[in-house]
Length: 336
Image (cartoon, rainbow, N blue to C red; front, top):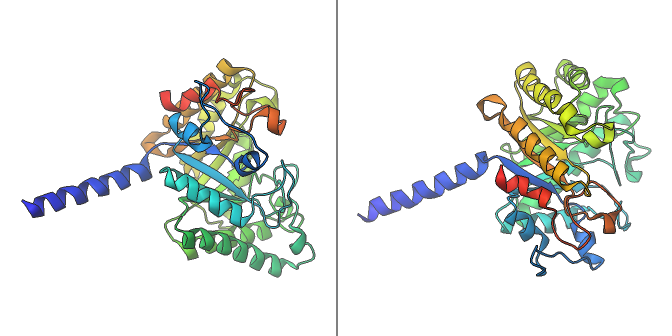
């Protein structure tokens, strides 16, 4: 009887671990959270009681967080912080609540996106061979620090929204051979820490199939190593309603899986904070589109800075209200 009990408990633990790893990702990028707390911002539940932000997100179905890392960030409220040390501390907090962790490497001292991919100041005058070493060492150092602290991220993203490449000009898509090498250095450093971590390569405009084919055909030609295709989806930035582009997103998700035999994940999504119903519907439709990808190869959806209230950040695509309470738009996570 004792042996049967031990076997049952082992089986239960194994099943729980496995189901957590395969559960649909409902996530939030929360890089602003430490700054918000440091400046005295308070978070409240819908009944007006003050509550810890991560718990508020968990209560709404969020099971994963995405944390950006900058190389040598400044102390600016909106475009600083996100150091290695701050990222480790926030990852530990999230893990204690049972959340899964994604680390997003920008390879910059501040924002990197399609409009800018500035090299860190410390790497500015480095040769290309030195940049390869920089990418490897920085990636390895941050993930090792997390692991030493007791957090092994489930996913690591090499570069943030890189349709034009990263670490310009050396890593621009004008020189795919070099970009391919940089991406592979990030992959190799990640797997050197833990081979089970999944590596993501991330492009914006998830509804733009031509952009994704152009990028990932080149990545294939350069033998870039990665596990997951990450997509952003922001109808707002292309001045269209989600209802006009959701079918294109769905097509692109399926096409990426078929063409490149990779899993897909929406690593950034967002709608207007003052259009609650529309943002709820956008999030619901995005979740449904990812869940429709055959064979569970659509892994999940992450909202970008849902807690980053406009009153604090000036950013109008959060999912937080002026009174410090979560927007009902986030209910799409727990209801779908």
